[in-house]
Image (cartoon, rainbow, N blue to C red; front, side, top):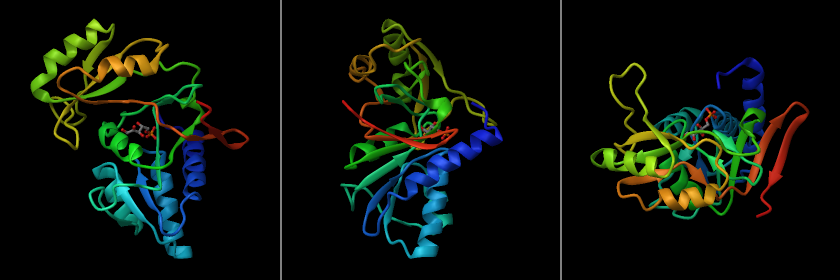
Length: 231
Ligand code: 5RP
């Protein structure tokens, strides 16, 4: 969805609200995208204003750069394998808090980081919150396995499209050196079942269906609503 100014305000509101969850001493996963960028910027302000003292773990080159610019100290998963909290954006979130991520091709690291965290929070504007997921599922693929993975995704009823670069000829290459295949499955009635069928395809590095969300910070007209997982 193209950003409008209302949309930017909503992204900022959700992003900044979640930044208040961070306390000194925490290790925090920093997600990728234009919504969680507001979280990172707000955390940078809190470091300067209040002396907030925490360590971030970036999920992408973009997040890492923004954290450095914002004055946030970073660490590595290798050094801090268990995070207190991970905060990230989403492409869609459904009524049961299943999520599709990977619009920025960062979902593999985002999944590793969020699964390493005791608590996973997503920040989003209202356009992302839907009854059922319909967003094409980003699947990160080892380039060598591209044709096999495309065929298997079609056998599962998907329509895979290799993501193309912008101002770069040829496919998008992820921070991990792989391709991304955006796969339209129409309305996804059973996200967990679909995830379980994509997982074992040889050459799939990671797909963008997440089932580990704990809490959604959703910016609505009246303010930021917090929706907790019931599952
Ligand atoms: C990156 C992601 C992003 O979090 C997702 O695409 C949302 O981005 P934005 O907040 O810019 O709409 O999953 O891989």
